[in-house]
Image (cartoon, one colour):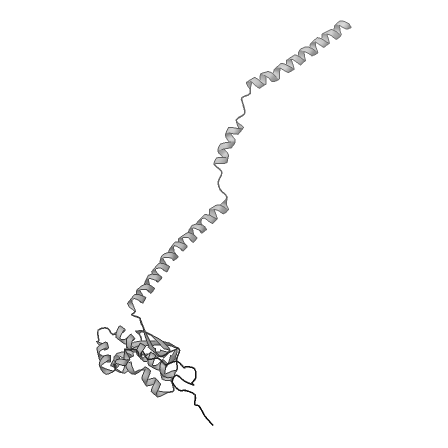
Length: 218
């Protein structure tokens, strides 16, 4: 009995040893895994999502539109500058007492405005004729210009005389080849030369500059 048990134990130990050796042999024969080498190239060759492909042409189209708008705006600016250069505009000044007038002259249809109002709307014919006096000396060429006068300070007559001088100076600048300066000086030199006289200031002991309060004795 003991002999049979010993034989069984030997067989079991041999089987265990054989089992322990087999996996070692398998480990030696099995090649090393190359999972890491295969994963890297797959990740490198991944295709981008479809949304990125759809957004790319839209962005390119927007950039192309922006580039096309820039030259259009530049062309418009150049046209405006060329139009401004082609149009002759002059500004002249005239003074009388406390009134200061600035006249802007350019090519037009014969409109004359004073403080944004047409001169023909001035009710006083004397003031109206005083303002438009220089235009009567240039003849039909007055119908091809526009005049805009801005007047500040002083009274009605002072403003009218300041506007008259400013218009005369503007006409001389605009029609530089017509010898208008000599013509105006021969007709009336006050058209171009400003009156330097000013109102004398009031003094004490009197109601005006020279008048004095009267004395009465009893």
